[in-house]
Amino acid sequence: MADTGQRRDSVPPGARQFVTTRWTIVLTAGRSDTMQARVALEELCQTYWYPLYAYVRRQGHSPEDAQDLTQEFFAKLIAKHYLGDVDRSKGKFRSFLLASLKHFLANEWDKARAQKRGGSQTIVSLDAETRYSLEPADEVSADKIFERRWALTLLDEVLKQLREKYAADGKGKLFEQLKVTLTGERSTIPYAEIGARIGMTEGAVEVAVHRLRQHYRKAVRAEIAETVAGPEEVEEELRYLFAALSL
Image (cartoon, rainbow, N blue to C red; front, side, top):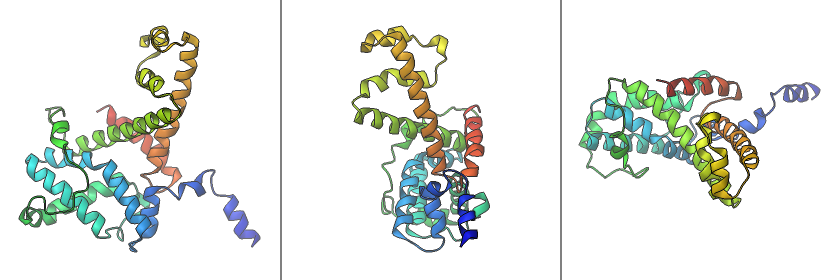
């Protein structure tokens, strides 16, 4: 018993909490189709569907076919348990999802085309072509488009969470004024002007910005943790995604 306690104490800080994240719930379920794993997988898919739509479009499929394919892929992924062969040593949801989509496109394209359009379960409302029309028209590969859009989707999800948190605390207006400071340089951010708009001193705005950036960094790490298999992968994924943003 003492040995068991010693092993438990050797778990890195935060690791026991980490196992409750969405992707680790899905991975832990293995081949069993538990309701908890199904809900976790569906939530992840709803958040990260657009990067895959952009990948399919960049592969040369029409908007209509890309919508059908993306929708059918997610419907099959959720309806059937495709997790038995996931390599837990490479357990990033990002990697699993793209590999699964490539397999789907290679093996089930004809079957997906044969289905009546709109006949499958709708996972999300796909207004994706409006977003895709804003993608760069250069020769960036489908894989690179996917990686960049994955990173941007993750950051958008973090901003959404922070907006909701600040609004719940009665600070929605403050967040809307300060969110630009998450990406701008200190020398380009008019703190005094922001303060004048919301009735705060320049010093108070600087403190609020510092707190927002702390919340932002913590939320980015937490969102990344939802998509990898263990806490040791968070730093690696953080570096990878920010590198994707520079492409």
